[in-house]
Image (cartoon, rainbow, N blue to C red; front, side, top):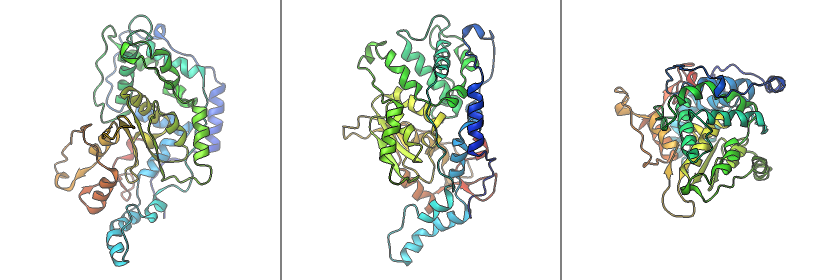
Length: 378
């Protein structure tokens, strides 16, 4: 018995036909001269996520797959809650995540594969988008990193990330930047031609600021894909987690997302981690929003060569946003996230099973145990 989460499915053959058709169509890249002046829209937190999920549904199906993985069927949830008692009766150590739960929750189909394909059209769209931040001139100036950070914050706000709950302040000389981005940024171009575009762009601006003169040398995605194939050539385990100690913009993690549903990346540069997170939302939703019962997914800020504990840039916000303690369930108290506290996913899942934290039933089906209203994402 599998999850009864109702998501309209599109088969892979249809998606291939859609991609082939759209890639033959002419594409007009917008720029500043195409903008409607004085346009005003009240952008809400998460406004861009439904658009992302709908476009992805037609092209790759990764967000639909992510949603199906998030809902644990009622019978599997009951079995999971019984695991401590069963382990005691069978005189064995309890499993943190019983195989039965994995088998009954994960879809029968393998992970939808993304075919990485660079396009100058998509890169030009992204470059024109960044050029729309300053009112005059181009973005590749001494303020390039400030413009890039503004765009990443703006996009992550649109995707509904809990660490970015308000629109960022527009940089000096960039008044009206939010509405210019709203008109020019087209995520469908990036989805139609998936690639590590930020990894391609950043090396050109690394010398644009005195504090960033060390350079940035990303792994090309074609090389990352080859490494991923070598690592997973014998047997693909969707529940296996991987670690990338110098993830940069996330190329190696993007490649491995074709094989695994969880992974941890670490870097010493906070902006690079934001770049990786932005691209995870586009191409690897389970790395952007962890599968709650699987855990072992995060982006960490810190030096991998030092023993100092790194800071969570992603998972800590989601877990504090999702989980509500049983004591506060009626009050529905909102817990403010903090980047200083990194809670182990294993501990979080264990507390859910023990009843110290309470997941919610999916209102779409009334049966699955999940942490969201999945209709918000699909």
